Amino acid sequence: MYRAFKRVLRAHPYVVLIGSDCPALTPADLRAAARALKAGADAVLSPAEDGGYALIGLRRVTRRLFDGIAWGRPTVLERTRARLRRIGWRWKELRTVWDVDRPEDVARLRKIRLRQVLKRA
Image 1 (cartoon, rainbow, N blue to C red):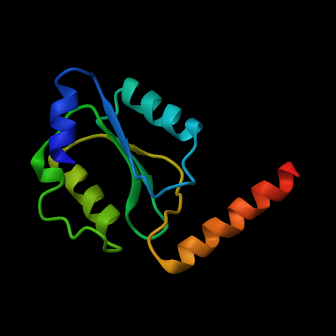
Image 2: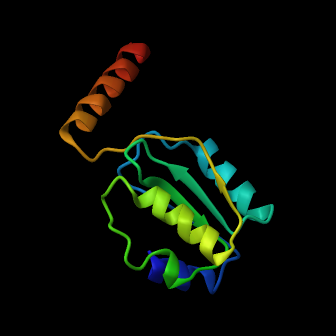
């Protein structure tokens, strides 16, 4: 993520990255992230129910935010918050969402998709 942010921030004032495994994120979430960054937040996060985050947006980047994080653990969000505090950045958190990491998440996704299909019928 560090390299992606570093590269894109050379040409753009802010960047928002989302997890490809998060069907709960909506266009409104992306707009809210952009608004927070435009309003001056250094970072924006959308917490995930499992203790990580599904969206991260930045106006600047440092390796300290990402290096040594135990990715995939339930402590990712809390460690990221601690690092943001330590480096003195202002951040905003959006709504908490769920992502698809485990078999039970796939079942949840199937259930939601089935409801959507039935709604359209």
